[in-house]
Each structure stands twice: as structure tokens, then as C-alpha cells.
Length: 301
Ligand SMILES: *Cc1c(COP(=O)(O)O)cnc(C)c1O
Image 1: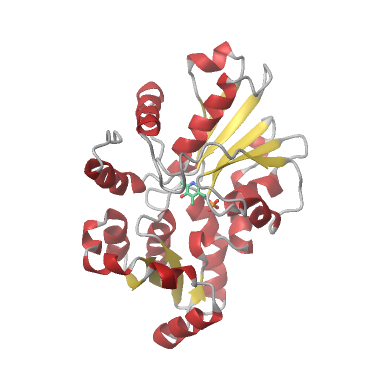
Image 2 (image 1 turned 30 degrees about the horizontal axis):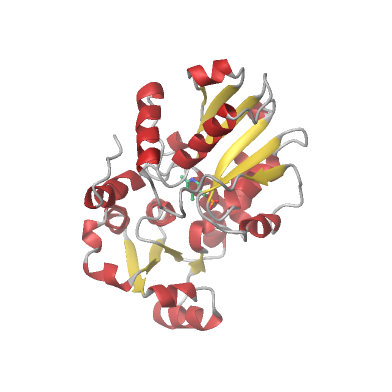
């Protein structure tokens, strides 16, 4: 399976004498795009080896991880259960493109209130899930665990070793931890959190001992899944100029951040930057439904 490196050609790059390449992980697989495929790979192998027949995991109604788990389960002959945040969604999940597709791929849903969802890692909550669904292989929210990090180490290889910087969007930090582990000492890994959260540094440290990385905390646009008119217009303009679609939750914020750092001279001339396009494009439909209600411009597809 080959994922290509694509050079981005924009005036601002030549003006500042830096190069920017995208690793197109979004093209890895038509349905399980990007890093969620990497994160599931060794988990599915482990679940099957241990004889599990069912995967159970957690997510919000627009979650790329929920979409990917449903598809991967179907492809590997495993049942899937999605514990979804928001009891009110139980009545109208068919209107949600992510959940509709997950259901078509065989996922069974268990909707829980936002309060109950907050306690999803408590032993008591797990016991209620066990009594309801019996035995299952548990994947945490966002799919991050040691095997997921191992899968994400494969994002970097010999073709990416010469870049000065490697950039990726951060949700739980599992993807970034894998990239850090696979990076060379003379590379700097930059994470662009898609949410506000001081806990991310520590979460990433749980999976890596290296120090050649930092988080850029000023490009979350107000928080997880929050978007602004400026961000939407930026993503549409980037698409017009490069023909590359970005998602509004993760990769759009990261590329906005990288270009802003270039504009403000935070990279020296002759720096080469690799940005990982982690995918997430399945979420655009759902986001456009929400943008319509808010009278904001829509993402072009
Ligand atoms: C989930 C996701 C991320 C973040 O991955 P983490 O390992 O949770 O940090 C980045 N980009 C896309 C498109 C994603 O779906």
C-alpha cells in the first residue's frame, strides 16, 4: 500500500523559502481514512488472536473513529458496538451521516447521556456494559492505546526521514506519539491540538519518552469541533488552490496553523516541513448540516 508525498505549491511557501509536503494518509483507504486505519490495525490483529468476536468502543456522533471501527469490523468479520455520547441522538441517528454509514456497516449503537459518557472509563460503567453485551474487545475513545501508537509509528518511513519538521493534528495524542517514536532525533515533531486541553502533553508522554516535539496550542479555533467562518473560508480556498480537501475538525486547523507559523517567520529559510493528512473527510457532510443551521458558509466538496 503506497501513500504518496505531495508537494504543496503556494506563493507564501516560496516567499518564505520553505517547502511543505503532505503525506496523503487520507488516501490510505476509501472508508477508513488516515490514522484511524493505522490505529485499528494491531488492535484488530490482537482481538482476533485472542478469539474475540466483538469490538466495543466509544465516540461522539460525528466520530471518525466510530466510522472506521464499524467499517474495519465488517471487513474483518467482527461485530461492532458503538457507545455514543448523547441520549437524544437515539431518536434521530438516521439523520446523522456518520452513524448512518456505521449502521450500514453493521455497528450496533448504545446511546448514553452526556453525564454517563463522562464516566465511561469507570469500572462501574464497564460492568454495566459487560452485563449487557457480555464479552468484547474494548477500544478506548479515539482508539488510542499502545497498539494504536505502534500502528501510527508506521506513518513515518525512509521516505520521510529527511524532513526537518513533521506535523500532525492532535485529538487524543496517540497518532502524534507514534510519529514521535518513529521520528529521528534531528527532526522536530509539531502537534496541532484540535481542542483546548492542558492534559495532552501528559497523555502523549504516556506513550513516548522522546523530547523532540512540542504542541502548538493556538490553533484550536475555540475547541473540539468548533469552527469559525475564517476556518471554513480557509479550507475552501486551500481546496481551490491545491485540489486537496481538508477536514474542519483536525487537518484544516493544522494546515491553517502551519501556514500561519510560516507567515510569522517561525521557520528558518530552507526548512522542509512534512504535514500528515490524517483524513477525516467523512465528517464533512455532518459538519455541513450543522453549518447550514448556523447560517455559516459550507465546506466545498
Ligand atoms: C482522530 C483524528 C486525529 C487525531 O488523532 P489522535 O490519535 O486522537 O490524536 C487527527 N486527524 C484526524 C482526521 C482524525 O480523525
